[in-house]
Length: 435
Ligand SMILES: Cc1cc2nc3c(=O)[nH]c(=O)nc-3n(C[C@H](O)[C@H](O)[C@H](O)COP(=O)(O)OP(=O)(O)OC[C@H]3O[C@@H](n4cnc5c(N)ncnc54)[C@H](O)[C@@H]3O)c2cc1C
Image 1 (cartoon, rainbow, N blue to C red):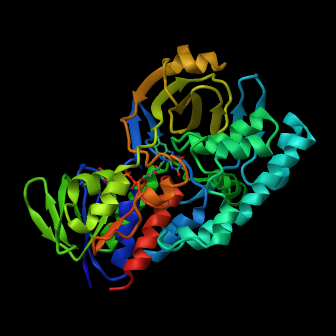
Image 2: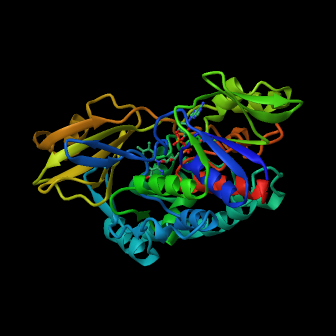
Image 3: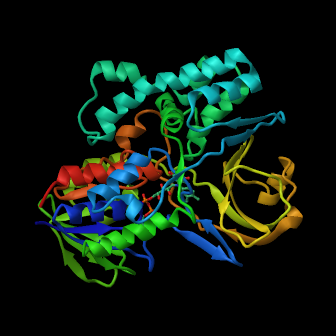
């Protein structure tokens, strides 16, 4: 049995902690805030409730695996439900696409109705092609840690040097179809010209596995993990900021808290921004190379988020609407609201030069006089921005050269979002193994 300290109780930290506890390790979580969950949680005001972070996920198997491998199945704690409504895309020319999420045939029909048979076929062929990309990514860098060199044939198939923008330009003749593909970069806070084309694999994952949500909000996942942590007898320390990872001769020995207390550990799992971990918390010569590499990355542009409580009648919107343009604005309607009201979250991807309500009005959503509550989300850490394909190697790998140190979370391999951060925790638990 090893003594494990997990720094940070975001989704990735909690997921690592409960998996490692189930494998028989003695786990302590140190979280600097008073509450657990990181960006996953709820915002409540004036009788409304909004998801503070994720509101839905694709690849539900990643969450199911997390709960099964840390105790009982997810269904014993929360119900994952498929999002049945199509995602709406509203384009600058006024046209609208309701793109079904998990069905190849109905996606094809939606594109045919909007842009004709040729564009529909281009979209379907492109998404079909990402099936091979997914198999390749899954077997080379999602299930195992991204450490070993990819084979020549894998690199040739992934074409990492080809940007998402290039793929959009070369494979899609309709500007609206290009905009939908580019959104897979924009939603992660990256520029499509600097994002590898294979990131479009999310179009395939959504079409294959759909999107899933939780009635009452995604914050329930954080609650369920906190409950699981308590069942697994994990020691949870809140208001416990870690200011140093202590090491000796290239191996971790524990952590130091802001109040000076030192905690000993054989293993430290960090859910902290790796640029902070290697730039400020770890001072061991073994980290010299990785520090240089990680500090060369930059933060992805986090969406600016405003939560609105609105009085009906309102324009009828599905669970998610993407208002393409500059900046791209996403409206999510799944919050909890009193009778006769709705709770919307508005995510602005890009530079919000105008007030959010002005942006919505300019795109045809005249809701200014409907607003009864308005909450601005705190700024948040969105992971690492794509700056060309080399970013995949510069981003912190899950296994550190400092012995006993592991990285998970939005800034580490395989990236941000619910599926990726959950998979990163699974990689780390598999590498550490049973007590
Ligand atoms: C508005 C919004 C909408 C989103 N929508 C979606 C979505 O629909 N689908 C999807 O898949 N993803 C979505 N995401 C992204 C997803 O929620 C995140 O990628 C994921 O929850 C990140 O989890 P994490 O554990 O990596 O990081 P975090 O949640 O940031 O957790 C890090 C934790 O570490 C703690 N910490 C940091 N430094 C220290 C320290 N020195 N000592 C102790 N503790 C420390 C922090 O306080 C925090 O609790 C969204 C995010 C936001 C904000």
